[in-house]
Length: 281
Image (cartoon, rainbow, N blue to C red; front, top):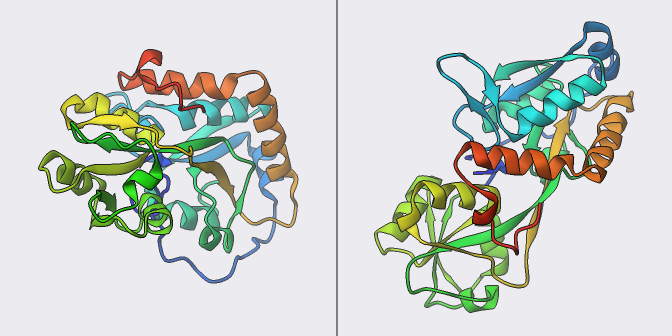
């Protein structure tokens, strides 16, 4: 949340950031030499990616160069638990998987675990489940996904994103308005060309906060969610991924993950009361 090609997430993509699926190599490569776990422990550096303009996942202050956001908060806590500091390399959702493969970064937060990506990188346990929502134009208020699965419903998506893939699978009978970018999909609703746009919750909350006139967030039933994970490099030594999995479960049990998510949404003006009760992180 959201990306956003290859996100997707997203919001997620990044989620994403919705995350689009970039063309990836057909086989995973196991790096030789020092494992990720040993490298982080010996160098005291945890290398992550940062993506400009993908709030609430990542935010870079242009004046100070300081990074904030949900994924950055998580990375700092993970690094602290490994007695390391965070080192951030600026990238894009589309290049993040390649950055993992080429050993430029150690972990990428906010990725959707698609089968094509799983061919070349590994995924941790879910960070959160990102709820699929719609932003509906005024006067258009479907209650269920079935209400949207008819030719009279014009549903906008950004091509290749997880929103697009979800719509094609669950809404085969709708009138799909497939456009190149998330901005074009939102503009379709604003101009009356579409009745709604599909976005994961991390994105729709920010979108509506920035442009309240665009429409209303609706969580159709049955509630549908997409896992958002962290991607790690394929490694014979599994200690790093195992450590991250354990850290995620521990952080979730403390309520820290939800706290980081809600705190990052506040950075872009989304308050607790702005989050529909149907959306649970």
